[in-house]
Length: 183
Image 1 (cartoon, rainbow, N blue to C red):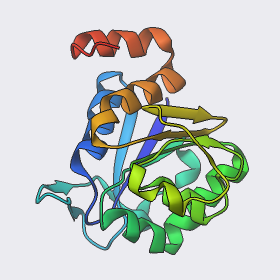
Image 2 (spheres, rainbow, N blue to C red):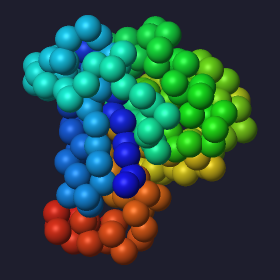
Image 3 (tube, helix red, strand yellow):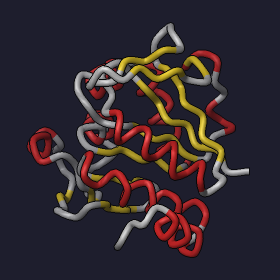
Image 4 (cartoon, rainbow, N blue to C red):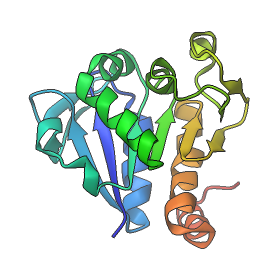
């Protein structure tokens, strides 16, 4: 069974996180929502509270095939500052496991030096903060095990690309059709 861990910090961008959770679950991919704080309830950037399944300390990330970092502020800042998140991202990168980051969240990967020479996309306002990456102006970019996307407006394209990478083009197409998403 494919397993994806979506990491949530206070101030996360709700559409970016919940679109991934929703569409991957529609594709019958197991998704675990994980709070990076000491409370199962995480507060979104726009006042939407989400009850997660797990706390960061409860999760054995070895079992996950992919981690996803939603953007949003100050959610991205909280992810950047969380030592456990930084450790898990480094471990996933070292093992070649899949890492998804949308909007400002590629900053976490950039801080760790994981984007040098990688073709990525991110929220336009944070492009200057990511050193050494090749910036694309596409909705989604895939370079090796790293999948990035620009923001709220690209959340469907991002989630569908994650489905494609995890479960194949046919499954991605099926979900796109079911939600009336025109590519």
